[in-house]
Image 1 (cartoon, rainbow, N blue to C red):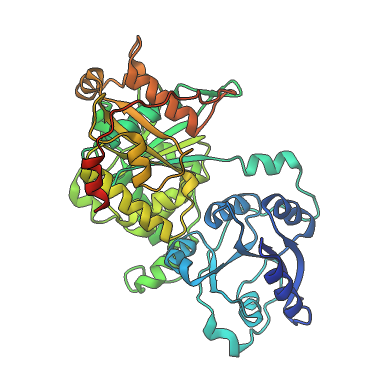
Image 2 (cartoon, rainbow, N blue to C red):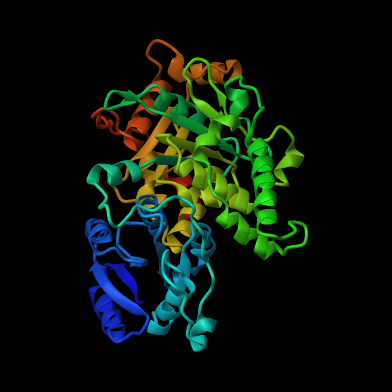
Length: 467
């Protein structure tokens, strides 16, 4: 029996060429072509494919798109076709459960994958051996019950399965810029909001694994914490591997990774590992109490935690990261729908953000996800926001959010009382509300038009950056 393949790619000519090349294939039947996201959703339901080839759609990111597809159709297998420039993201596609092939696509690659990926209910066939060398095994098993083809999925069921999560990553490439403060305030802001009259379910995650202080800023205990979850994951992995008749201490690291990818997820158990903020009900997944515990957290732990959070019933997942480019930070950036990049209006902070933006652009990271936030902005700064925007090479219409320097902020940090819970008119509080509404408008609220910043220009100092 042939495997039914849906091709999702906005390159019409390439799609037609590949379809023509596969027309006489013994192994593959192209059951549809989708040039856009809405078209893909319709054909996933109507055409009932076994495999989905994700070539690329302008304005979307394949990892996020695949996540949404998989929630609705967990029985499908996905293949990412990457250009040479995109191969740096291969480990993250692998962590998401995608198979990876390189462009230009050869029909033999798709045929060989079709034989290696075994759709449910189909009898295995011998894969063509001459094509095995071009394939990198990047698969993952899913244990959730797939929807039955005998009972068509109703629109309401799909809507519930793919209900979008707002995963917001707060990142700053330089320490001491107030990143954790911004994370705390945004998390509190979201926990106080409603969507269609229903309070938002919000969790804040401290991904500064060794020196995280998110719990401290809210006067919360550090137990249970992220490492509690990691220990449980390892216990589940040991049991899972033993159930397969293997010794967990004798398998290779590659095999361990494969078993980790196949481990069933348990979103319903997340609350075992969180602490709750008493005033707002915000859930917090805190960093480990002991720095040495952070050394035992591996990339597959991080992937399993993020993937479980994405499948949970939280509406907003906010991740506070470390000022580095470790695996925890990169995975948090990759999983995010929105990234708040925090800095200060000083030379070293601005320079670090510019370098990160350059790196992300080279990796073709979707820049529309990124919001720039300048914290502790004073009335008279060396650099205006327009100068900073120009240095970052942002479009003139791209807003830079600014949080004013405020004496109330210092008090709130020291007391553990978020400014969002303080009464009265506080400039920093109003600025964070504006940022929060831009990230996730709730109950029909629209972001208010921000007044133009009128700052004195001092181009001679700024020219030093352009050097």
